[in-house]
Length: 153
Image (tube, rainbow, N blue to C red):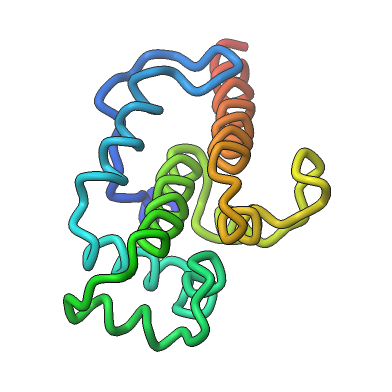
């Protein structure tokens, strides 16, 4: 078993529909649904494990990363903070379909050419959800298209 297989995410798409240059509706729908229906303490726990409290706090625009730890105890966030955190979670779910955790983290922190060189994690903080989700879907789709072409060859 490879390192990639051992680090397989919990998310599993409901469909094996091939990708065609954009996120297929079943995967896009599944990640959206999962990001909304997962209890918030579980979202916080998974993001903390994947990214650490400091990055989750950065995306959620929190003054202190300790707040993320409070969420694990069931203390609810403000609504706008929850929205940012669920957008971060959805982004991570999308990227995990095709990439290892270190690539997901790197993508979130790297300046993005379609976001005026702003890092996606900061775009989430600034409320640019649609830009981040669209960029994540495009990035993931390009990788999956490349993998499908390699298998077909």
